[in-house]
Amino acid sequence: MSKYLYHTACPECRRNGRDYKGNNMAVYEDNSTYCFACGYSEQPERNRKEYYKMEQKEKKNKEKLPLLSNGVYKPLKARGINETTCKLYDYTVGEYKGEPCQVANFYDDKGQVVAQKLRFKDKRFIILGDNSKALMFGQQLFKGESSRQLVITEGEIDCLTISQLWENKYPVVSVKNGASGAKNDILNNLEWIEGYDKVIFAFDMDEAGRKAAYECASLLSPHKAYIAHLPAKDANEAYQQGLGQQLIKSLWEARQHSPDYIKTGSDLKDICRTPRQRGLSIPFPDLDNKIDGIRSGELVLFTAGSGVGKSTLIHEIAYFLHTTHNLPVGLVCLEESVKMTGQRWLSIAMNKNLLKSGAEFSNEEYDKAYQKALSDGVYIYDHFGSLDTKVLLPKLKSMVKGLGCKVIVLDHISIVVSGLDEKESGSDERKTIDMFMTQLRSLCEETGVTILAINHLKRSSVKSYNEGGQVSLTDLRGSGALEQLSDIVIALERNQQDKEKSNISQIRILKNRPTGICGESDKLIYSRETGRLLAYNGEDTNTIPDFNVDKAGEKYDDVPF
Image (cartoon, rainbow, N blue to C red):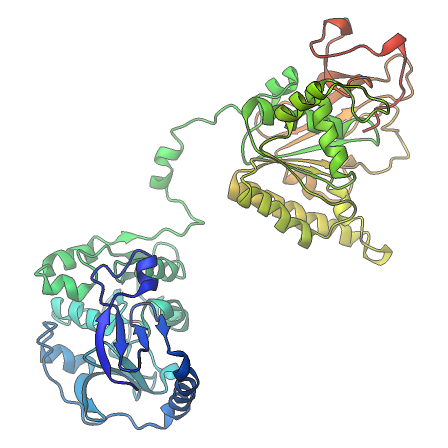
């Protein structure tokens, strides 16, 4: 190893807001560097091959190197640690290849020293022996019977410090390899650690130490782990600054760690004080009133027979949320092209059906509609056809987390499994939808996104959904998870064969978790001239805002979308 020259600031630590004193990185005579805080290193280009060979050789011979036997017990005056404490923990001072060092001895579960950590004056350290078989530092001293409290530190010196302040009466141990290896040490000794009623993690107060403390605490049984907030960067630094009593106080006052998946009553006091808020309004007044608006984090499912108008309905709602409430929207329409999806929204903005052949509009009308509907905050997924759930889920997450979408339109769930071949259909289709719905539900909970999704109905030999048949939850095609994991399920019913009322639809609420109100809701009227689907209560269509009556009283027997 090249000769040590001096310490300097570590660029990696500085990038992460650490190394305030600017002395984490050691610089050596051959211009190589090594950071003893984060492990970052730099090697001169000419020496990299030689360095690699040397590193591999040392690694290969490490277990062959005999453990040091020349260590003696001495007080660590610079650290304030007395000889009694060093002797208890078998922490000695010795010499390695003519260079003085401190030696931390590590034991296995049979009480034999199997590894040694050698710490040198410039903060370098090496491991002798087989560290993989070693317990945590100091663990051999405690069987778990004498005390029901355990303190775990990030380093050996901190372990000695706290034990000495407690007059070496209580169990204190250290992880073997600092913050980076702490989690594995806890997992490897979990059964022993769980034998204590209370486990306090007294790790360093830097970012790496805090992160490791929370990771380790999360591995223990609920209400067993505690995390101490030390009065200085680490325990020994606090002791050297004369803060020994404050350090002990921080251990007694360590805050109990509550896992993310468990909330205590005290956690809920302020959360429950605020009542559930009304959701954002939608353009259908009765439905809006009965479901109390649309809220973030909800999964809303729409269903209807083929051609009844469910896609038109879902886009009317999404367009309203975008233009009225300024929510970024992601459109995943798996049965149509990007152009068709874009023209849907332009049709709503322009109040002219761009999907109808021969639609006429001016450039000014188009530009105005584009500016309102698509110019900002609308993201359309460019795909047509079947998609595997493993492909689709990352796309949805990217829209939410990467693009900031607050609303996702998924049209439709059924096509996600339509690529399954005949052998994979049946129960596998249900399993796929179960898994996919669970993932959608998790995405809503994790990110607060609102998902508006469409699902098809099963074929029925009893009633025709295209002739006004009433829809129920049991008619959903695919899986019970569709109704179980959705917050709201909305059906659209219409008799396409009724010449007098073929453009009138009925909204039916099948499930309503927010308010519990189900049953019939708004009636809707569709105009082929505008492509709009709007609330209708039997009034003269000329009085409905933004609605054009079909020319010459023409009757159309189908809503094409």
